[in-house]
Image (cartoon, rainbow, N blue to C red):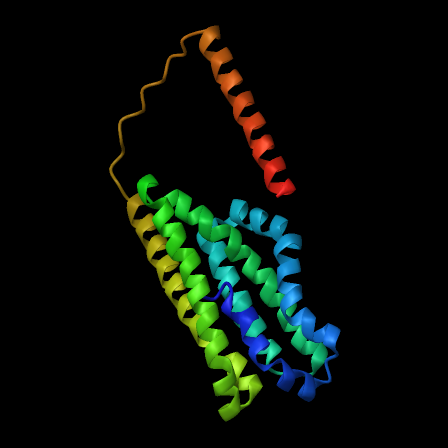
Length: 219
């Protein structure tokens, strides 16, 4: 829900935002355009974060960034609103990449489609709920509090992932205190033929990945 709702919330109260901050029509368009642009520009940052810290830590960084950006965006004048929007877009990019990686790694193969569908549906449900709820909320408490209020959802998600990461770390520490195991039996190669087959398979995988990358880029 935190990967789309924060950029949908301002669309319901754009007249209030422009009247209060003096944003032009271009600036108002950037409230939703900047995050989408960041989805492309910040992707290398997301992949680097996943490789270095893992998908769980990257999701925590994502939620922390979205929460910080949501708060910042609701505080100041036009440039602060746009700065918070940029932070939200960059942080969301981390989650856009990390969640599918986590699903592919942890979900059984026959359930990946269902998990991915639930993930996508939740983003859409969150967007719809935010779009329908922000304007009535703004009529009561003002647009700043209305768009900041959705940060509670992000805060709840962040708290969950922090607890999950802490539990995983404790489990890892406990698992290191185990009796010594017997040394692994070395695997004997089948000779040059096996090595050549392995090399050919690696080349085939690389070629396939390049073709997929080119197709995604063209799409």
